[in-house]
Structures are given as structure tokens and as C-alpha cells.
Image (cartoon, rainbow, N blue to C red; front, side, top):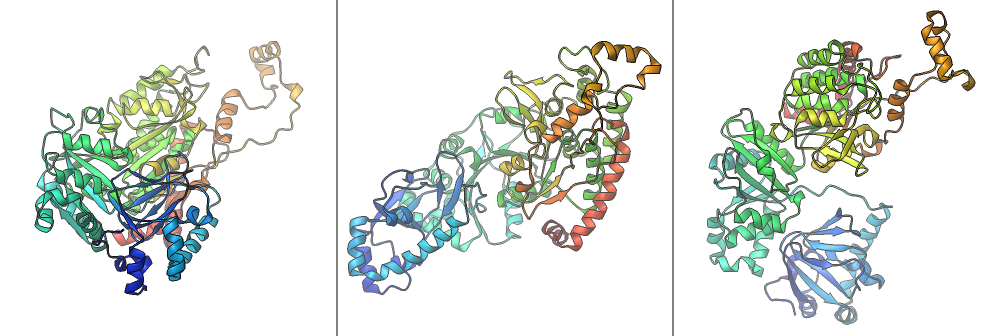
Amino acid sequence: MASDDVSLDQIDIFSGFAPEQLEQIKAKLSIVRLSRNEVLLRQGDPADAVYICVTGRFLVFLDRSGHSIAEIGPGSLIGEVAFFSGGTRTATVIAERDCIVLKLSREDFEELARTAPAIWTPIAKTLASRLAYANTIRTPVSRPLPPPRTVAICQGGGTAVPPGFLSLLREIFEEQGRVAFLGSADVKNVLYDANALDGTQATQWFNTLETRYDIVFYICDRERSAWSEKAIRQADIVLIVGRHADGDTSMNPVERFAFALHRPRNLRLVLWHASRATVRGTGRWLADRPVHIHHHVALDDPKDIARLSRFITGKALGLVAAGGGAFCAAHIGLYRALTEEGFEFDIIGGTSGGGAMAAAFALGASPDDIAERVEDIFVSRKALRRWTWPRYGLIDHKVFDAALAEHYTDAAIEDMWLPYFAASTNLSRNELHLHRRGKIWEAIRASGSIPGLLPPFFNDRGDILVDGALIDNVPLNAMRGLKDGPNVVICFEAPRLEQLNLPYASLPSRKELLMHLLSPMHRKNLPKAPGPRTILMRSIAAGRRSFEAQVDRLDLLLMPPVPHGTGALDWHLHREIARIGYEYGKAELARQKSSRHPIMTALRDKG
């Protein structure tokens, strides 16, 4: 029998029932309480009961993919499809926080259906909507969850969360809507007894807060108290806030509880600084904390807290920079056009040459400064034109490596104020590798290791890393894995080789080729066929995975034209390519503004 403190008339599915009908239904229901991460339904199990969510939040998973396909909230039926079809559970349903559900067994439902047939009406409506939704999905897809409604804030390391951080965070969120910040003292004023935090009344009270506020922040105690545990169990995501300068970065008991309970995707590390300065040593904070993402914030710069808020609410603006060899100089012109239009990015990432440009943008380099560095690396030093005996690659990589190390110094990705990543191909594991820690120049070197031309890069684990373009030249999906929200995506149309009216048999043998090369008079008679460098670069471009299906309506896609006759290693033309990118960017942004693209509209409203 359901507990008396659960009122059925407050649950949407039972609205419209007469009091006597509600009492009849209530007599058949039993109350079930679940803690965070408890499994309510498991795929493949017999469907012997149907459930009604009273409070809380559930995630639905198919197979063992690890990606949720749906969210279930208060007032919803759970498990009704398999229950009424008579089969087994079609998905696994897991509590995303402390929850209360009402259980109705098959025997009790059949009796209710005879004595209170009106119960079929809301069930039929729910089934119809679920089946309609199922028909729109041919295959399981990973969809972003709604923005978190509850956030726990706990201390990282040994220093308390500064009041200034909480004040800035509250100020920014109050500008966006209804927000509540609650600590243990606030809750005691309502519930009185800390021991009652896990009771039905408390669980209902916590979940009711979601209907009153757009987002609720729970401020944990410094110690692992009953309140701290409840706050973390109730949270959609957990912000671990630590003082970057702390000498001792060991996890405290509250942190350990959060890591034991939450998946990494729900955990964010926020490292605060009194003011903005060069950052070193972030790796010691990340060594034992497998968080989804980390942020640096300066307490004297509200923009850092504002960026953090956009990551929390799923509105962070990303820049995705595709690879393309010398064509990547267009990124410089496009970035100039974007910043002149008022774009400020929250996270930047890219592949190959795009990863190199993205790192420079994230470090705050100006377009003119980047152009000078491109000139130094590729034109003055001729870093990609120093041929060598082809034992490990066609090009002597030492000059290229030294130039990257000089220009990007020994700075680490995790120490950057703006989140950044580069993508390479891991041949040892046959998968995309995201560089989110380690030296910036090494990530760029790995991401741009053109197979055959340059030796691969080997990381500390011994993995063999080559150009990320082999798997994902436009790492938009990787960006989506790090955050929700719109993106500006820059890529290039892969140039195609012209068809040749050239007999295959005309290609010379080794002896014939040597004779032609040794004689200037005969050299001009060689067949006009592309060389191995051109074929290699074009082969990489031809094998790039299509990304168009990943582009969302909120994303802004920019595809600058590639100058006719330009090759992917023609870095001496970088200024002309950047100029074309800038002119294209100015014109395309104006066109998108007139057509009211969502990104341009948001930019206008922000201004």
C-alpha cells in the first residue's frame, strides 16, 4: 500500500480522477525509494510491473552503450511499453538522483482495470506519445540531456570555497532566471532534523524546488556531513571548487564521496585564482580526479564565471577548426572576421593544422602575430620542405619540432585559461585521440603527423599517433562530447585532382626516371603526373569522414573557398589564403546576420 504522505492528486497522470477513485488506486500502489545510480528496470528482465515517477529523475539506456537516450521526470509512467505488450524490458532505467516511485504489479493492475476502468485513459495517452516518439527514431541516438536543474558545489582540496566565487556565480545566474543557493543552515530551517534528509518528505521537498526555480545550487559543508551527501546525491552535476595555488591537492572526504557516486561526465573541476596570471601545475589537480572538464577562473574577472555558467547551462560557444595543410591559413582570416563581429569563444579545438591554429587562438595570439609565426615556421625555416632519407618519413622532423617547441614553449594544455583540445589518430588503438593534457606543441605535432611525410608521434604510453584527419578532420562530434551548445565550424572543400589523359604505361621505370632527371633536356619530357607528396595529401583528404550529419541548426558552418591550383603544402601562400578567408568571412557573416541565423541573433542580443 502506498504511503499516506504521497498525494496522488498532485501527480499529473491522476488529475481528473474522483477522490474515491484515487483511494481505490492508492490501495493497490506500493512506494519504492531509490538512491542515486540504483537500477529500477534492467533491459531483458520480465516486465511484471509498471511504475509512476513521483519525484526525482531517471535516465534511460539501451544496451551497454553508456549513452542515455531519454530522461524521465515526475508524473511519468515508467516501463509501460513492455508491461502492456507482455514482453521483456526494452531498456535499462537508472535513478539519476534520489527518487520516489509508485509500483503497480500486473495482478493489481488487472484488478484495477476491472473495478476502475478510467485508469486506462491516461495510460493510453502516454502509450500513444511514447510510440509516436519511437517511430521518429530508427536507430538509437545520443542526445544532449536538458540543462542541469540541480548543482552541488563542494570544496576541492583543503581550502574552502571563497564567498566571492559564490557571489559572482549567484549574480550571473540571477540575471538568467530563478535561482536558489542553499546550504545546510537553510535546509535545517525547513526540515529541522538532519536525520530526516532521506525521508519521503525531504525527498519530495528537494524535488519540488525544481518546479519553483530554474536551477538550484546546493552548497556542501566542508566535512562529509549528512547534508553534503544528500546535496551530492541530489545533484545533476557537481562543481569541485579548489584553490589552484594550494600545495596539497589531495582529495577530501566530500570529493571522494562525489567521485564514488557520480559518473565522470557529471563532475567538473573549477580552479580559482585571485587574479589572472600565467598558470602552471594544473596536472597535479587532475592526476587523481577523472573529471569531465576543468575550468580556470579569476575572481577579479566576471567573464570567467560567465563562461563557467554557459558550460553549466549548455550554452557554451565552441570553435571547431578543420585540418587542411596550408589551407588552414584561412583560419587566421576567418578568426579575424569573427572577432571583429564580436564572437568570444568558450572552448576551441581542431585537427592537424586546424589544431595548431586553434591553440594559437586559445592562447590569445592576434591574427597578425600568428601570420608572422606561420611565416617563420613554414617559409623562413622551410620546416616541411627538408627532405631526408625515408627511413622514418620523407621529411626531417627535427626542424619542425624545434619550431613548434619554440613558438608554443613548454606550456601545457591543462594550464590554458580557455579550454582547448587537438585531435590525432591513435594507430595503436585504432581510434581518435583527444589531447586535453600535456605540452601544447606535442599535441599539435601529433595531430599534424602526416603519415609518410612526417614520423608519427609517440606519447608516454607508447601509443603511435598520426594526423587526426585520418579519422575525423572536423572534430565536431568530439566538441559535442565535451559540452552542449552552438559551435562555429570551419572546414574546407577537399580539392580534387583533375582527370589525366595520360597512359599508365608512360610512367617511367627507375632507370628511365634517373636518366630523365640527370638530363635537363629530357626532364621536361617527364609525364605530367602528380608526385607522391600530392597524392598522399589528397588521399588523406579523400578519406575524411563526412561531418555534415553532425551539424546542428544552431551551428554556423563556414567553408572558405580554396584558391585554384593551390596545394596543401603551399605555405608560402599563407597570407593570400588568409586574406581570402577574411573576405569570405566578412561576407558570409553579413549574409548569416541578414538571414537571422541563431548564432548571429544570440550575438546581437548579447551585445
